[in-house]
Image (cartoon, one colour):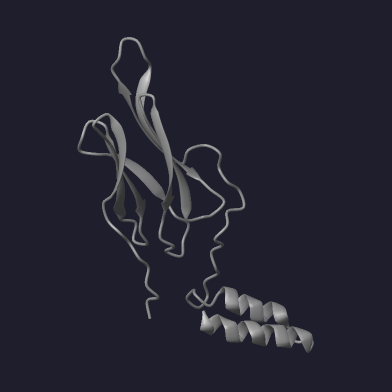
Length: 156
């Protein structure tokens, strides 16, 4: 944070003195990216109202049209997704936070090992699927479990 404070104050002083504040603020925005890369906005301009990832399995029942269903929806924050879960008449919501790898995140839901389970994950910078969380049914209730934790380092 201190690294950004000094250039930010410098940009304000330059703007007050008639300097080119646009180029200074552009340098600040791009300070976390490699040379030549543009900063990826943390905010989505257009939020897709439809699920971007979906998993569902019909639950056999003569009287009801029940499903085990898990869906991920975009939010205005580029690295947060709304997680919607349902098992029979039990439903829940949570937030799935994806690490900022400096590129547009891509999420996916894959089948889990248990009959009513699935794995939530994302693709890393090399295109490798990374398991992140599991949604499953335990004792007729929905369960959300963190499988692995991820962090992004500065790379310097």
